[in-house]
Amino acid sequence: MSVPQQDSNALVEHGWRRVIITITVVMCSLLEIIDTTIVNVASNTLMGNLGATIGEISWVIASYAIANIIIVPMAGWLSSQFGRKRYFAFSIALFTFSSFMCGNSSGIWELVFWRFIQGLGGGALITTSQTILTEIYPKEKLGMASAFFGMGIILGPTLGPFMGGYIIDHFEWPMLFYVNVPVGILATFLTVIFIKNNPFQVKQSGVDWLGIILLIIGIGSLQFVLEQGERNDWFESRTIIIGFIVATFGLIGFVWRELTTENPVVDLRVFAKGNVATGVFFNFILGAVLFTTVFIIPIFVQRWLGFTATATGLLFIPGALFTGFLMPMIGKLLQKGIPPKYLIAFGFFATMLFVWWCSFLMSPTTSQASFFWPLMVRGLGFGFLFVPLTNLTLAGLQGKDIQQASGLSNMIRQLGGSIGVAVVGVVLEKFTMQHYNDLLIHATANNPNFTDRINTFTLSFSRYTSDLGIAKTQAYMAVTNQFLKQASILTYINIFQYLATMIAIIIPIVIFTKTIKVTGGVIKDAGH
Image (cartoon, rainbow, N blue to C red):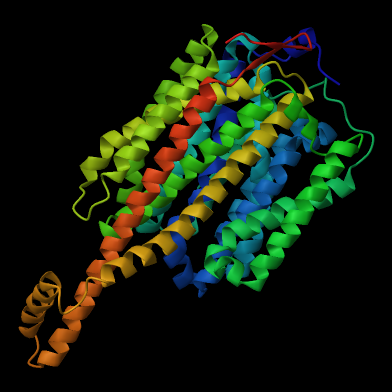
């Protein structure tokens, strides 16, 4: 049942109450997003302290992601069942308590368990935060609400690796999780005091247990395949094959169930309303580009340029702050009536420029300063993407449709990131070997450049050993490492070129997309 316009306006907050609620929900969404990436840079430390293998450590990351993506689309239904305020406060408290238990874990599987619980609590924070912001701001200021929410979404993946690297460099590993505790306690207190229940939410009479089970099986299995596929050689692994089959049948069953039942746990019919389908598609692309670039640039600079985890995180900070600075301004542009799709098209254009620029930075001699302006352009692009995308997706929706669309949009953006990272991981491995083999073709005695390089290295190594055979073996190893380095750099260049091409294809699609405006329940062409 849609919420009438006058009832929707009754939820709007004013003055200092709106400021406090805004800070609270942005803080919660930022916490949740940071925790998706904060552990990524701590793998070696956790392995050493918990006596775990790299495969076991991967579950610390995967368990959080799987729980997270299962709960995100269910957040709207859970909020209506238990009350928005009660469910949000419980989710923050669960996230905070499980964060403490993560830091207090003495074994790897204890940590994995509490990370899963942390993901269940954190999954509600993004979607419910976005819904609360959308309801406490008047409709004409929806762009501003989106701007504040977007700060957490864009800053989170950037701040996560930096905070993780800084904590690992200066503190013990439990501090990765303990930092959430005081912030979570404060957020829980502010939620209980200031956030109101939505009196217009309608509780469903029945529980869609089959839909819940199929969602857990389908989405959970898909995220498992994406998280663990690369580590298990993808479809060379029987486990991954089974996971993919289960995900396929689970998702097909889930879609069928949600479209045919009277009270679905996730109302997929919202895709047919307003601009939801269009906005969700573009959010998928945003997630892929956002998480892929946060994934690939740190690998390159740490492996081939020797950056520390802290230095790597610092690379992204100026651009992320620039994004945060831009978002309120872009919100005001939306309030002035500029069609969101033109702002989105500009955002994708700036992002394409950043990605293409990065393809020229892939060199073993690239300095830290060389990344400054490209990453500022990245910040410009993301600033023009998130706020208009949120505005485009949620404009015209009311009541439960807002939270359903928000949950689906956030889930698809996370899936876009997971799929993007998975694809890049495969490309990085396959293309590097292909380039390496292409370079080996020239490693013959008939190639004067190759023989000169071997002789130069042999002469250099012979200064440290009297055995010429050992020196020559070391020379061949050194040249092999150079080939591998060059092959990797060529692959990074390819990846950025392909990303730029993909974004270039998206831009005209954005420009020629028809947007829909919903007024009084009547769907109309917006005319832009």
